[in-house]
Structures are given as C-alpha cells and as structure tokens.
Image (cartoon, rainbow, N blue to C red):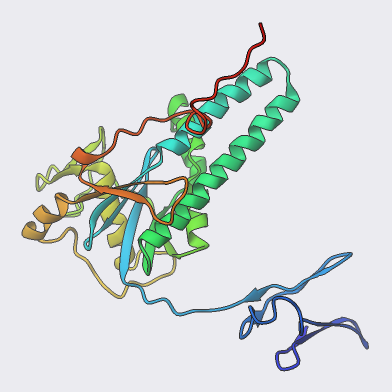
Length: 309
C-alpha cells in the first residue's frame, strides 16, 4: 500500500502489475481528516474502509490511581484527595435482568430471554459510555491508573466462594477500563497485594478481613479501598506499570500533616443520565441516599400498566 497525501490517493497492489487506486479528494470527510495519517485499509466485497488516525500532545496535569470495587471506583490523587464513583446503578441493572432472564428461561420463552439479554447489554453499555465521558470531562488532562485484573482468578471455584464468584462476574471492570482508555490516557499496574500493603510504611499483612486496613507495624488505619488506590498510584510512579518507568518517586503516603488533611477530603460522584460532568458532592455526611431501582422505574413513575376488567 502506498499513500500519496498530496494527491490524496491510496494505491493498493493486488498482485504484480495490478493495483487498485482509491482517492478521498472531494469526499464529505476531506476537511475533517486534514493532516491525519491513513491506517491499514480494509477491503470488503462491496466497499473499502479507510481508517484515519491523528496524534495530539496531552499535557498530563494529574495522575489518579483507581481501585475497582463492586459498588464503586475509588480513586486517589493528592490534588483532590479520595474520589468515589458510585457503581450501584450498574449493579442494579445487572441484578434486575438476571432475575428477568431466569424467569424467562424457566418458562422456556427463548425469544423473551434473548430480548432481556439485548436490553441488559444496551443499558450496561449506555451506563459505561456515560461513565467514561463524564469522568474525562470532570478530570481533564489526567492519567488514570488501573489494576491489571485477572477475572479468571476472581471466579475460580477453588479460590472464591459461590456468592463472591457471582458478584465478581457481574461487574465488567475490564470493559470500564477499556472504554475509559479509548478516550483518555490510561496505564495498568499489577494488582497483587495492593490492598494488603500499608500505604505508609510498606508493611504487607498476610490476611486482610473487613473493610478497614490496620497496619500492625505503624498502627496506620484506613479504609482498604482507599489504601489500595494510594498503592496503585504509587506503584505506577515507581515504575511498576507495564513496561513503563516512572519519572517520579513517591515514598508511601504523604507526611503526617499532609496525611491528616488528605484523609479529611472525600469527593463523591454519581453518573447522570443527561449531562456533561459527574454529579459530585463533598464529604460522606452530605452524600445523597441513592437507592438502586429498576431500569424503568425512574422513567415514567406516574404511568401504570393498564389491565382490562
């Protein structure tokens, strides 16, 4: 394949002395792709697909480490503090349609079952798209660091109980990470021991129970999800990313005075059905009580289903 950007043509050699020439001069997208590079052309039976790509320089102003939980994404950055993004509406969608599919399957209604599968897929995709778009608009020029999760280990029968396996399989963490990575700069670090390592003195505990982490060496106490978010960010800065080498080095948590101020700051965020940014509020005490609801419950609450006499 040979591309002539001046004449805006692509010459594709089919076999010796036989080639196909394609031009995008005068096309409706000509001005839109001005200065872009041509990717690998795809030949179909009835059409030719020409992918274009462009590069832009992004000045990273902040780095957020994200810990992926069942009900929220917990992030940390010294510029803000801890960030909590609510994933309960996503869990609500999954639970509602799991029940609907089970009922349809028990009654042998295949068409109804496939209908529920498609609806669940579309609504989950819609939620993740809104999450990624609003997250990037709320935190521009940011590098997002995620755990490199292995879901096969998280749903292994020999390692995880039945209830936990079902809950782990329900949350599409990798889909969320991939969708955010399509719109913003992202990186991944190994997930091993991010929750078991003390973010202040680096001591690693053998067993971790409950939602609070307490270091037996230095006595540091913190929520385990917050502790993991700090370690994920630190691990990337110290060069623990996939083939990346950090240019900076952060030795554990900030100093004691900075630590006390950082632990007081919690930014809570929820996905809005329509809007450009996340719905945010500061402090857990002012956190709205969001209850998981059925997907249709919030659309037309004043309309009741008509039942003939």
